[in-house]
Length: 436
Ligand code: AMP
Image (cartoon, rainbow, N blue to C red):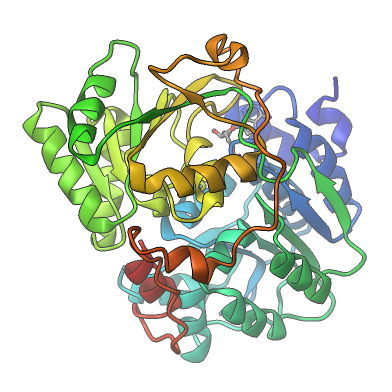
């Protein structure tokens, strides 16, 4: 088995690895770190929870930490772009921890908070800047930062960037970067639009993939319960009061749904907090902190929390409502079974949602075991060590999104806003607020 010491990382970088308690590189780390250390551009397909943050963070720390160079005022040397504020905050925290053996500085630029402290941090110059696109564009427009000194760029969760309408912003940002740079694009799935973007911005990339595209984490035991909408509330309470639920995330499609479900859970005596795009940034952070520290055992979330949020010990994911976009299912259930652990994902499916379930099964290429129904042999044997493997109908050409959202009985998925951003109201904010 590869060791971190065999990947070619310098001693100060390895100190960060040790401090984080990592002993063996994950598969994406074994492949991506040497490619980035060799100076290659990278196109990486990796599921969340595979250790991809450290996979791109360590080569950055290594490259920037070795030299004596300091960033010039109002510049950064490495730029990491992430689709959501929470993910950006998490990445920045992770890079800071991995850079503990170096003197590198990091900064976070996201919407929803006052720009002043960010402007001051940028004024000094920063080694590694982690940002969401909307607020970053604001700072560039106001002259708080230029991208002329960027040596390494990472686009993380590129497919969610696409879903949130950020791709035009990404193209504008990339146009401001020096031509001589190293670029890594990472995505959980590789839809054609992301591949097109990759060809535009990457130079002869090393293509690295550690899991088949859109395959849910194998360690998640998935099941679906068919029931009427009116029965969902009781079913959810029953699932969450089961003894083996350590920590659970309940997903709804809409912000209103998330609020309603968390209220109902509170009434039922469950310690639940909600997180979605209508909450202020501090409310969102508070909810996430409560969930992370265990003050709240249940997080009710819209799909904003489906990506990237890394909370240890999420034993259960409950899809109170199925997502309109099947890829979101993969991201939702990826919140459990992280870092080699197993997890359970239960979907509550009302009759109107059956077409959404069919879309999901087509995407993941298997049927999800039905609870409380005579199960197939494969489904009946499902246990944490034996995920269901029954195949669904072969994937067929998927309906365009417009027809899916036009389905009469499912709430439509509003298209992300594409307006010109301004402080706190750029695409990052408006897309999220409209969508999630
Ligand atoms: P990520 O996919 O980057 O969100 O990482 C998922 C989780 O795996 C995080 O909690 C990381 O701290 C953890 N992790 C990353 N790399 C390793 C490693 N080599 N060994 C053990 N845990 C790791």
